[in-house]
Each structure stands twice: as structure tokens, then as C-alpha cells.
Image (cartoon, rainbow, N blue to C red; front, side, top):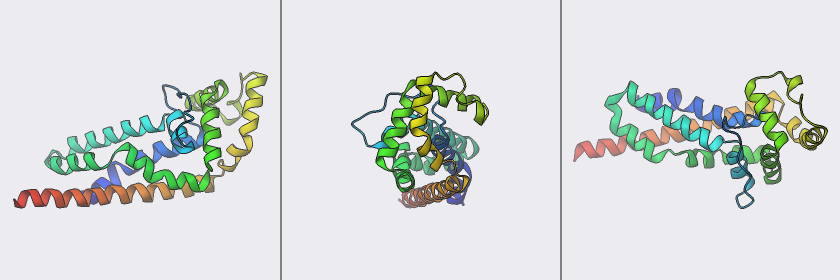
Length: 194
């Protein structure tokens, strides 16, 4: 029972939502940081969009919610917190992104979202402006910069592509959380037996 509640109700949706949000250009509320040339494209994209930090916050909130709703699961939840980290979830989701985006694509997106134009586009999307208004207020130079990335954005604007990524991400995160919960239940049972 613990496994199904944790895996299917509390964590999966919020984690996947965070990871897939960047595909439609939602960078973190605090704004993107500089793209690192030392890390691979996937990690650069997760960092510059703030997805890594937002994922950490979402996991913390999900675990807090579990603690509040089920204080009797203290040992199990503590075990899951030790096993399931934002880094682990990001690495587990890496293949989903790598099937859809090349390393060069992800580096390009990270570079774009690090730019002034990319930050303005992300801010407009966060404000919920209409699709036709996202590029209003950009200079000619910024519009030219956006234009370089239009073919890349167009590939992933297809709802079918986003639906596949959502399903694959949901399945991956669900599996990870359930595996962690099952492991932790066994750990707790062994402790109780001692």
C-alpha cells in the first residue's frame, strides 16, 4: 500500500511536470543561469532552465506532504528521501530527452535560454502570454536569435511528441519511486525484525 501511494499519487506528477515544462520554454522563476561548457548538453539544459533546482523543490514538497499526511511512515519516507534525489531522477529521465534531442540540440537550447532573448521568451511564457505575443518587444537582433532556433522548437511543439515524453517520463519516475518504496519497506521490515 505504501508503495502505490507514494509512487502513483504524491511524487510522480509533480516531478514529471517539472521536467517536461522546459520543453515549452518554462525556465525557473529566478531566471536561467549561464550555460556551462564543461557539462554535457542535457545537464546544461537542466541547469540553465532551472529544472534541476525546481525538481529539488518539488521533491522536498512531495516528501513534506507525505510526512504530514502519513507520520506513521516516518522510517519509510526517510529511506525514500535517502534513495530518491533530484540528481537520480534527472539521470533516470536523461534517456527520454536524449531520444528526442541531440547533445548539440540541448546545448543550443541551453545557450538560447542563457541569452537575453531566451530569458525574455521564457519570462513571457511564465507570464502566460498568448503564443502570438511571446516575441513582442524583442529587438531585431533578439528576433534573429530566436529565428535560429525556430526549427528546433518546431520539432517539439507537436503535442504527440510532448505526449510521448510525458508518458515515458511518468513511467520512468513511477518505476523509480515504486522501486525505492519497495526497497525501503524491506529495510524497515528488517529493522523491525531485529
